[in-house]
Length: 254
Image (cartoon, rainbow, N blue to C red; front, side, top):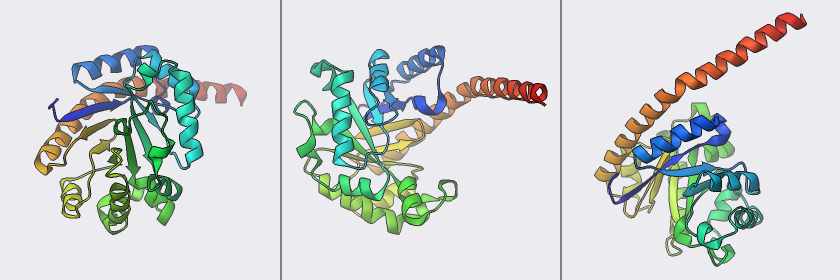
C-alpha cells in the first residue's frame, strides 16, 4: 500500500452474513494486503453491531444512510456505549453514507456543531452514494444506472457538499463505479474529494492526483477480484445447501 493512501476492507457483514471462520479469513486477508478493517453496522442505533466491531478489533466503522441530526446524534450515543473508552472510540475512522435528499441536506449543514468533543472531524468521511441518490431523485433502478451518464445531476450535488465541508476537515468520498473519466471530470470541475469506495474496498487520500488514484483503483480492483473469487465457493455452498433443504421440505409438505 502506498503511503499516501489509506485503504480499507469494508467487511459488509450484513450483506454476506459471515460465519466466524470466514471473519477470521477476511481479517487475515486484510492484514496480508495492508487493508484497514471496516465493520458495517445495521443502523445508527445498532449497539450490538458496534460491540461486534470492537470485538473483532475494527479500526473503522461504516454506518448506513444517515438522514438527520437526530440519527447522527443517535449514532454517536451508540458509539459511546459500544466503546466506553473514549481513547478507543476516538481512534476510529467513521464512514457515514449519504444517499438521499435528506442526507444531502444533512451533509450541507454544520455537522461539526453536532460532534462530541472526542470526535475529530478528520476521522469522518461522508460517502456520497450516487446510485442511491439517483434512485430517489429519478426513480431509476440501481441495476440500470450507468453513473457516467448522470454527471450533470451528480456533479453539482457533489460540488455543493464538498464546498460546504472543505473548511471543517470532514472528508468527502464517492461510492459506486468510478472510472478514470469520472475522476478527470471531478478534477476539471474543481471538486475536492478524498475518498473513493468501489465494492468491498475503499481508499482515502489527501490529494486527488489523477494518475496515482487511477493506478491505486486498478490495484484495488485486482485485490477485490482475488477476494471475491475466494469467497464464491463458500457462498455457493451455503446457497446450494439452503436450496436443497427447501426442495426437500417442499416435497415433504406436498
